[in-house]
Length: 151
Image (cartoon, rainbow, N blue to C red):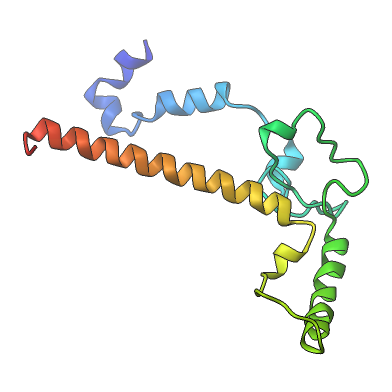
């Protein structure tokens, strides 16, 4: 029914082409409560965002850790104030190294905080997405080459 209505020239010109997508989005996608939708800094908006009331950091986790991950348990999810304290300790550690200690490499600040394991999870995810995208692009390129007869 909707396809027949949107296929006519009258509706196509009136920009009703996206009608099906809009209806699907409205009724098929998960609904979020009003507070999630209003706030730009809500946890569901992006990884590593800070919850405005608790100060907890929204962290990505691997699917392997879903069974035992408890964000309410003490020390499982980083809290902004704890991260600030950890970052403040980094210059002291660097000074101590310069005054007699040895260091083989310079670490980025986040690698010396409680965020490191979660950043590693996110980096692995991004790497897999990039690899999949490259594979997809390569497959399309190979298919186009085969179809055009340039082999």
